[in-house]
Length: 336
Image 1 (cartoon, rainbow, N blue to C red):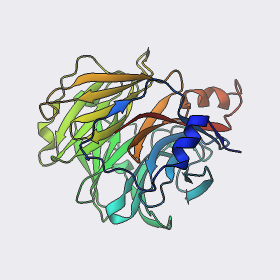
Image 2: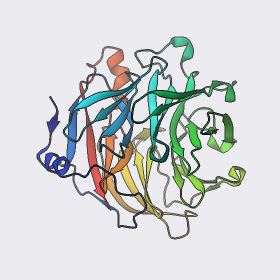
Image 3: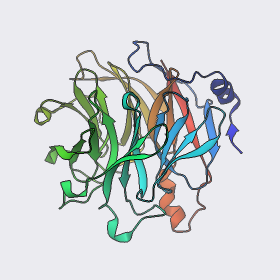
Image 4: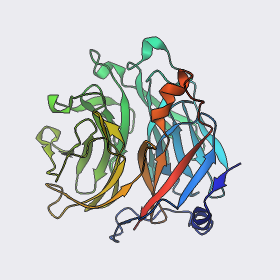
């Protein structure tokens, strides 16, 4: 049974089926409490990436534990969208609405049902599916791009030409995959190394660059698409340690979702704004998530939703310390 909060039920029952355009120019406001949420029964799903289906209004989530992608209707029905035996953990996901594609990062952290000990931090790939049918279009092996490194394909984004950009949190790299499945190292730099997981959340800005978060030290990078080697660091008022996912709410507003990294438990969502094209940014608002290991977010009907997958509990559950979770939560954290 799917359980809704009272406020959340009202939100979903009146929601439109198509997301508000990301650059509508409306003000972005973070919520002041955590009363608007949706809870779902989904045994051992442990979702990480979240997107919104552009025509059905469904939430789409990738599963770290199950290695599949599910879709959730506005009425709360959970269905399998992608089941592919090649997937270990479905990490970052991205809807390419213009081309009718769903892109899924495949990695092996050693906690998935199909994990193989020899493939931990080794297997990385980008799987591309038809969004309407779930049929596979491409399966692009990325493992050979950084052969001497540990690897973990984490988040991804797509530019206006359909090129995908994938952050590797361990191999200090961003990969590029063309629409026809040709893969290359887009950018690598020693600045991207650090403790634990590093490059993570990534978004394409309409002015022709990427915004990329480094989880371990809280940095944010601006990477030109036409000259990635000329990347720069966005000046922030403080390090946003633990940044996992990014949501580009409009051209001058970025939502940074943090959890835990480098011994720092941030558990905060930050609204960042800029007045100089992301040369610098300020913190305009915050939202306290609590200890739920919030990961990534999506826009739906002008509202911002974030996945609370509680991935930080999975390791202990696999050791028998706590039961595997049989539900998860999607939190409304703000609106446009």
